[in-house]
Image (cartoon, rainbow, N blue to C red; front, side, top):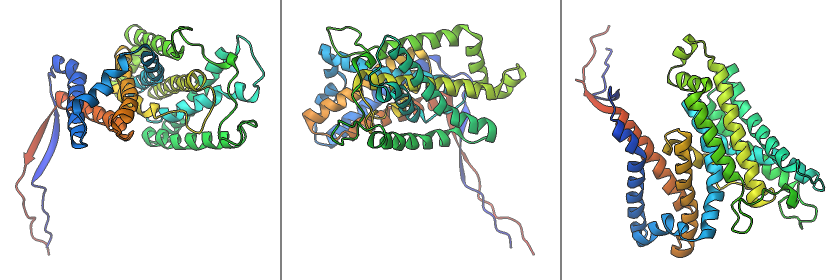
Length: 371
């Protein structure tokens, strides 16, 4: 007897033929509002004043000049990495390993000030920035090679490479690059002043030129996407690789272009962070910028100009989280939870705006007889 039973319920997503442009535009704002509501409920459950907590997260960091500089410092890497990821995602290549590319950019760019710490000159900083970009691009080339040659899933390979980068950095600063005068602390020499990114305004605060790099990169990528053939190729291959191949565009070539570009910008963010904000290599040089930048990219609608705004919003959560830890005594994990909620609501809103959920009920049937 062959008894087979079908599932009584099936859930499908059906593409909406005419998704609302208004709701598509409002989606990030709706997601942010839902995040604030859930955040308020979370703080109330923790026994904290929700109004005070949200004020500390999103308003207090904007009240003083020094905190605006700190906001620019944290927004710079988020915007740089997010801009590169937006090109990857619009091309249909899911680079999840920007954190590792960020770290390798910091490592490559730090080679000269660590190994040749007596070298100075006006050429030093540009060379460091260039080698940082090369380091990030080379690290991104690994998942690009594996995808184009072996059809390996770039999500898995790029993500696993993050942990290799973190361990490699930890080994470097505890081993061959450890400061011989640092009393066995796991860190490199402090960079010479010639190897430190200068502040944007010398007398007003710490915000350095990494933030300017981020704004310029977003403007250039926006121009490419709107007015250049390469931007058109990104859009076409991202929407339909088959249509792109029919038009004569190379899908494998786009994998290499988008991954290397994304990795180079993450690497630039890495060396800018090390040179401008830290001044040396340590076991950890990032609070998770590479992962947070994924949220930045989607909240900015994968548009380089929108990413400038979303990068500033996510940078606020870092500063606000630090203020909430000091004033309310909450865990630093609350910041990560805020960021995760924001990504969840952004993706959920986009899905429900573009698709409608269909629940299909079917009658459970038994199969026929068998010998």
